[in-house]
Amino acid sequence: MEDNKISVIIPVYDLEAYVERAVRSVLQQTYTNIEVLIVDDGSTDNSWKVVQRIAASDNRVIPIKQENKGVTSARINGIRHATGQWIGFVDGDDEIESDMYQILLSNAEKYHTDISHCGYQMIFGDGRIHYFYGTGNIRTQDNLKGVMDLLEGKIIEPGLCNKIFKKTLFERILKQNVIAEKITINEDLLMNYYLFSVARSSVFMDVCKYHYLVRKDSVTRIELNHNRIYDPIKVKKIICEDVPDILQSCAERAYLNTCVNVCNSLVLAEQKKDKKDLESIRKIIKKNRGKINLLNRKQQLLALLILYIPSIYKVLYRYYAKYLMQNKYE
Image 1 (cartoon, rainbow, N blue to C red):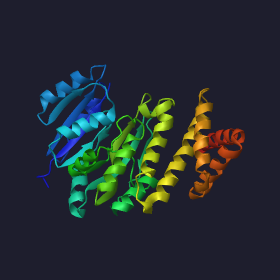
Image 2: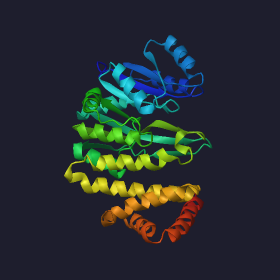
Image 3: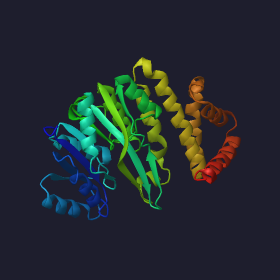
Image 4: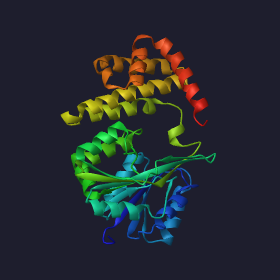
């Protein structure tokens, strides 16, 4: 197993207060045949100085600096510099448990898969921790099942960071030139889709070894803007146009689910400009109204309300969301 090097890519943008902790969690892995490629994506703070200091203290760390082009570009830059047979990712403000890569690589070799992934934790600033899921179960997936589970949100988390991938998978999809670097939201899901599509099989062990740290200023908590509204819909549309026929219904269901969920987010955000966006997405749902029956009952009801009585939909969904929040932690 030690013959296999894992190249861990950490994209960084203005994370001077967090990046060292993330890197140290990788350097302290029980599996030691690793290299850490830290790609500074044009930071405006002191992140690059921190990265250079870490690199000077450990020759496994490779610092890379680029102009600000976004996280996908930073990851691809890291992949092109990687020398390992396996690729992993860690976000610059997260951390991993010391045996994560040992477990992932051991499972990949045991089950002869191209992808190995595990569960994760979401750690909030107020001390709350959500586990996904920690059952200890192991499950293998062939090519089609992997893509289906990804689209349906089962087993496969849409992020890249709780996984390792054979480098040859990236070589294949980069050669196909399918990665849309301008997409900034759900870009992980799209890259996962392409990777699982070309992988022969994957293995999942449900142990929560990756730690997502949810900060107040995290990108996932920023108010809605054009990319946050339309990128998730674009991603699902791209997938709909690419999937094999056997997965078409699954992809179309994911596409419509995303449209409904974005409408829900717009209603809760209550931003003045959202009226135009809500109407734009309503038109997409209308165009695909013949496929609403692919959704579950709750999503079907919401889609029909959005289509035919949007004013009532807004009121009802706000009350529903308020009820969920009040009862979430009881």
